[in-house]
Length: 320
Image (tube, rainbow, N blue to C red):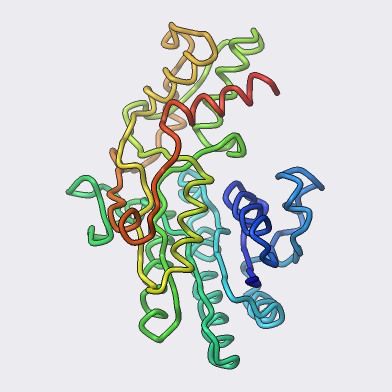
């Protein structure tokens, strides 16, 4: 049994991760903000068995003290401001939460490892946004890091800090996660906005979906698969970075077509409007990952197709 500490346990990935680890018999501790404390059963009944700690990620001293007190064997840092669009509005806060807080987690983990004399494993949830608009496709662990958004910049800093602490002897892993979805994705994300609106239009409760760039292409995977990859990376004998992706990209318009089709609407174009307010100042055009290292060294592989992922989200929204 491992003692595990998860930041962002109330989010999509945190909930799935907690459930997987609890099912395996691990002792799970989760960090939440007071306003994000989940209601009992809100993210699956097994999350009720986790030990929740209320602390703000930017309270670096409090965060460090909490990690020292819990004394985990594994730390998964999933928390952060995860909206690229919001990062343009709040770049400083994005830097503090998504970037600087990671340094605090790594330092606390290193101090715990040094004082206890045992291995403390850390997984940082990185993002494909660290690559910006890459010159090559697909991207792998050797792709040049050149972010084009405040969110990507903060994630890039965190990614580099993982390398710094790994060089210091900490078992630190950067899991470079490409877009991953599920019915638990919050409605502030474009994918859930699409599936929810498709369901509302199908029920006659809405008549329009306003979106930004329909041509942007992303590599979309199934969130529980990506959580499983992080656990495999944490428990692998060698600490290194891993791209976690399906290797297949789809455009936003393809996502819309799949969602509307699942909801029984074939002529999706008549319901969709491009709103300049949702177009980001700078946006990566296409991000698609090469997960060869994760597949060969971790034995990992995605389990759901793009169509299956969209269908699961739409079906949930249709039944809501």
